[in-house]
Length: 399
Image 1 (cartoon, rainbow, N blue to C red):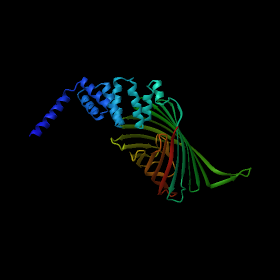
Image 2 (tube, rainbow, N blue to C red):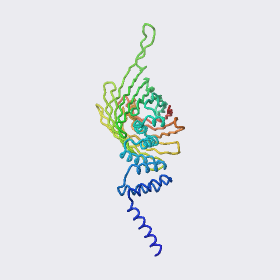
Image 3 (tube, one colour):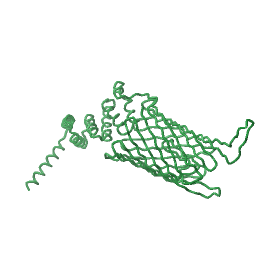
Image 4 (tube, one colour):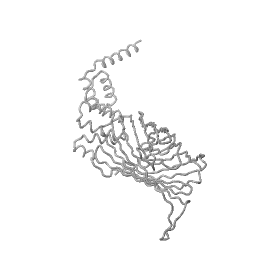
């Protein structure tokens, strides 16, 4: 009975204390917690203050810092953004929003916040508006087919990332694909460019162009010996052009993308429209889920492509991402138009796993394995299928 009365008395006292919370008391308690480094009490008091409609800039800054010290950068970003609503020019708030962007892998958001800081603080953060070469990356891919009429294709790619301004990014890529199918040799040289502009802190616009230079050498037809006694092999060139755009919205743990592209290959136009939604779940593993749905339209067919991916932090510096894609991937493009599946054989199913190893702040290694289900049409109009195993490795070096 005495224990029950004591429990009731303690809880009644806590309720009264919460009910009697005022602006001066909230300011005083959270300031003392901030000075002592008592982050849990600071956060608890801050939440109760907000519940009682007591909200001010310093409260949000202190809560943002408390979450920052607990390495919960998404929650920290949320409260610093609330503080920014009270004072949009506060340099302390902008500085921590910059760091929140960096620590949540949202570089565009970080640089947008840095663009609003004075030059002396930008220099202290070691950030510049112009970086002609910000990062370099290269990738090698090799595929193994389970059919003898197709050689194992190879793919090489090198990319250059530039930052013309705080709100503008430019990515360029040069790549080559090679494969033999029956008696024809296929070689495709590609160029890709993507401009990314931050319209505001959470919305960005991307515009891209991808050139495909496909050359087919057919040795089964005929050879001509010219006057210089040089053998001329039947060669056909098929240029292709992809025009891509998207609008993306990313706020805290949520991101959404609406995209559209058109691919002109020979005299055929292929349209692709997509919607993508992703979320980062709370927790130290940084688990994220991303779902994408695309509509493909060409003169003969209308089809859907669905992709689901999930990733998590395995160790302190190693991340893993798995994905599954289903649908007819003929002329399908992904990764903002960087990859185009315009090979002769159609991919109908793909699943794989990618591992990222952040060796240092400037060096990242990655490797991928994926399994593909492929189809091709025979001379009698029947369809055959085969399996393909794909292995990739690459490096990203931040200058």
